[in-house]
Amino acid sequence: MSRGIRDRPVVRLLAGGRSASGRLVLGILAATAALAASVGLAATAAWLIARASQQPPVLTLAVAVAAVQLFGTSRPVFRYLGRLLTHDAAFRVVADLRSKVYARLIDLAPARLGRRHRGEVLTGLVSDVDAIVDLELRIVEPAAVAALVSAISVSLSAVVFPSAGAVLAAGLVVAGIVAPVTAAAALRHASAALAPTRAALSAAVVDLLQGAPDLMAAGAMKRQLELVDQRDAELTRLARRAAWATGVGAGLAVLAAGATVWGTAVVATPAVHQGHLSGVLLAVLVLVPLSAFEALAPLPQAAVLIDGVRSAAARLFGLLDEQPAVSDPVVPAPFPQAPYSISLRGAAARWEPDGPLILSGLNLTLTPGDHVAVTGASGSGKSTLAALVLRFLDPADRGTAFLNGVDICDLAADDIRRVIGYVAGDAHIFASNLRENLRLARPDATDADLVTVLRQVRLGAWYDRLPSGLETLLGERGALISGGERRRIALARALLADQLVLVLDEPTEGLDVPTATAIMDELLDIMVGRTVLLLTHRCEGLARMDRVYQLADGRLVTATPIAAESSTRGDDDRPRLSAAWAVALNILGRLSR
Image (cartoon, helix red, strand yellow):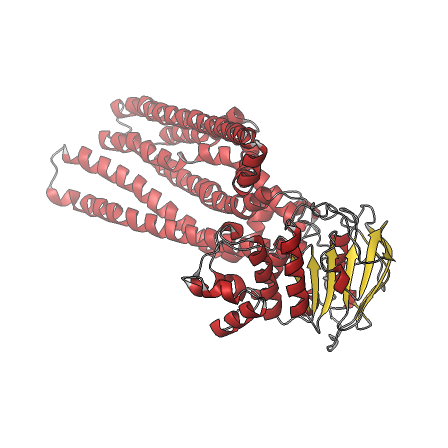
């Protein structure tokens, strides 16, 4: 794609919709036919009424009567076809673009997506993609229809009386160009701020809803509510300004329509007195502008929308053009057979292409069945190490990370994640039932498989008490279950996926010591025979590890399994997008294959 098109997001949006351009063109032609039928109906009806007042023979009016019936019945048919075709084209393009955005989100998580707030991601996935609908249905289609109908109307008037055609053309220029430009000028750049403001409001509402218990405990709920009110007030102000600008343009268009009708009457009436024009045709010339201006009515709103569409498209393509942290080879190397060993030799990693190194000169070997723990202060790089092992990040230098002796950069990332599982302390629980939350890991799993794996992770007694069984709803982000149950469900997913290597990232985060100790004992009992990499800043489970390392300054040093930091904060070396989101997006990507 040329740089010129990349720098023009609206043109790029249109170019991306070529797959449905045929339907869009047909829809525009149908909409044009509908409005042309309106013009024809007005002209024919005017001629019929004026001619009937002269009491001619009835047969003289037969053709006009038939034409009125034809235009009257064809207008709604063409209008329906136009709406059907243009909406079909727009929604096909939106569906295609939304699937591309989903795919890109999966590729970017977590390394490139994590700096974006969830509200911003949600706005990009919904509102910015929906800008395609505005572009095609409220900008392109009205503009094209207005141009075609204006040409037809001016041609009709000019054939009857050239001066009337000139007056109509001038009025259409005012309503079709001057009014929209005035509306856009009245709004200035406020429309471009609508989508960012909407994103900021979404982010504030998400923070409020998800963090309500913590905000209430900290006494910060009032402050967050005030922030939501501020964002809402700003969005309301911008929306009112957009509505005002649209009203200014629409009012100017109405004035132009009225002035055109009067202007047509002024220039055509003398011709009637001079015998150059019949009174019947004068009625036609005066009424045609009223129907012609109907096609120009949506243009002020289109002019108001264009800046917002351009802004949304720029953000959308900024997301789509961002390069992922991991790129699969064109021809992946054959994937090695189990059992699996992982080796890092002088590995280095960073989250941003030009950012600082989080890991440097790191050496680690995991042989089949090893249970290895890595401790370290918050921000020391434990989550970066997890991302490197799972290939959410590629090492800064090739030839430093290996799976069974094969450079991981030569392997497909999805293949690696099929054998290396990830269990996070903040594992995401979807607002669905227990069955669907488990089947994310293996869509073809039977109910018997799900119950078996629940008993394997020591949730059998809990499951037996559930009145709805696998149909039990878990709530938004697992609000209806405990932290321990959330972690066991995450482990159940890993067991369902039958992954032989498991990375446990802060599995006891936020739990009290007795609960954390019990959960770690249960986890390690279940994972006997599997390779385990435990990343933690707590001491639970360290005594049962084969080796314990401490991560400091990007390197590993041998440590003893003694009490680690008592801090319960999570690593802050990773982006704000939680690892759970990364795993969830990866699962969605696997399911979409």
